[in-house]
Image (cartoon, rainbow, N blue to C red; front, side):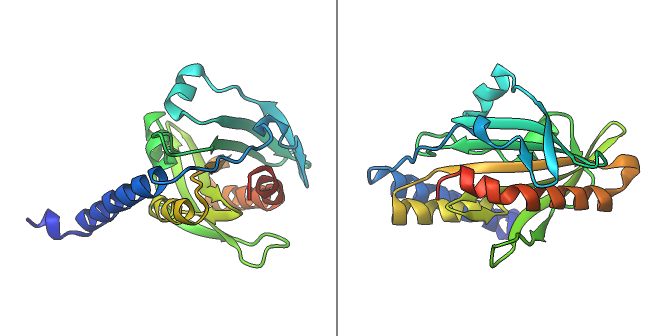
Length: 219
C-alpha cells in the first residue's frame, strides 16, 4: 500500500495513461510520415569540429533499436584537444511499437553504470531564442568514465526527459497526425575524471552541431 502512495507509483500511472492516450491519438487517424535525407548525409564537419570515424552499428543492435535510420560517429575538435561520440536514431513513426530507447536503460545494458544522479542542462544555441534543455549524466565502465548528454528532437523542439517526450508524442499526434522523433546523444570521455571539461566539450560540440541537426530532421 505504501508503494501505491509513492511518487514512483504516481509517475508509473501517468506514463501508462499517456501511452494509452498516445495509442488512441495515433491509431484513430491517418498518420503523416515526413521524408528526410539519409542521416549519412549529415555534415562531416561542423564549426570547430570534424569527423574522425564513422562507426557501423551491429545488425543485432539495429534489430533492437528498430530505428528507420541511424548515425554513429566520432568527431574531434580542430585543435585535436577534444573528441565527441555523436549518435542519432530517427523514427518516422511510433505507431507500431518502434520508439527511442532511453540511454538510461541502454547504457547499463552495455556495461556502463551511472555514477551521478541524472539531471538536465541548458545549452544556449546561436540564433535560437530559447536554450535547449537536455539530459546529462555521468557513466563508468571499469576505469573509463564519460559524460552523456542526450535529448529527443521533434518538430524543432529539444525534449530532455522520457515523460515529456510521451506528452509531446500525444500532442503532436493530435495536432499534426505525426509521431516521428529522433534520439540525439553526445558522449565525451572524462579524461582523468575531469567531468567539468568533458561537459564543456560536449556543450561546445552541441552548440556547433545543433543547427545542422535541426536542419537534418523534419520540422
